[in-house]
Structures are given as structure tokens and as C-alpha cells.
Amino acid sequence: MVSVVIPAYNAQKTIAACLDSLMKQDYPGDYEVIVVDDGSSDSTPDIISGYERVRLMKQANAGPAAARNKGAMDAKGEIILFTDSDCVPEGNWITEMMAPFKDNKDVV
Image (cartoon, rainbow, N blue to C red; front, side, top):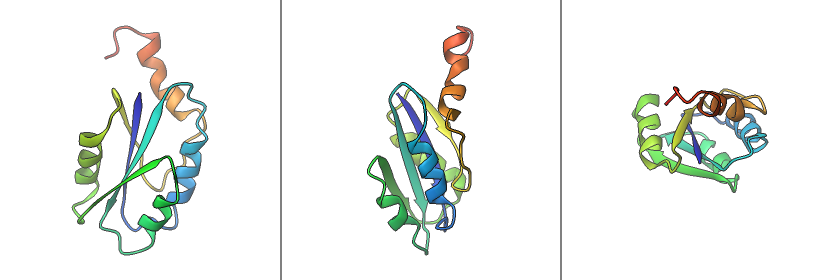
């Protein structure tokens, strides 16, 4: 299991493209997507809650590092990947990020 954690603050203009991309990943294994809303005052939480496979967590505004830490603490995956709410990962992003763990036994 892989967990993808995304901090988001007032990301209504970018979060949908990010999540759409993550919903279309070619990764053959199981993965979860966690978005930590960092006290947004726009429609960011409403947009996120429209995604069935995305877990929304909320916190008072504390910055992206605190949001990442909150998501990581609640993640169920053995491996945690981080991206930002204004990024649109390629369709093979998770697969490529996991490749070193499968191809090289020295990577831990």
C-alpha cells in the first residue's frame, strides 16, 4: 500500500487537476490519497469532498509541513509519497516512484 499525501491551502484553482491525475494512475498496487486542508477559506474542501477515493483531513492553518506531517501520521501505506496541490502527476508517477523499491533491494 502506498499513501499519497497532499497539503492544500486555498487550492480551489488547482486541486481538481491534481486529484484527477491521481485517480488515473497506472500503479497496479493499492494506494490511497489523503489531502490535508490547511485552513482554506475558499472552496478547496468542497472540491476535495467530491472525490470518493480521497480522504480529506482538516486542520487550522499551520503551513504545508504541518499538513504533510498530519497526513503522514494518518497514512496507512508502507511508503508515503508527497505532492503539492498545484502539481499534476504524470499517469505513471506512483509506478515510477515505487520502481526503486522493487528493482533494488538496497533501497529502503
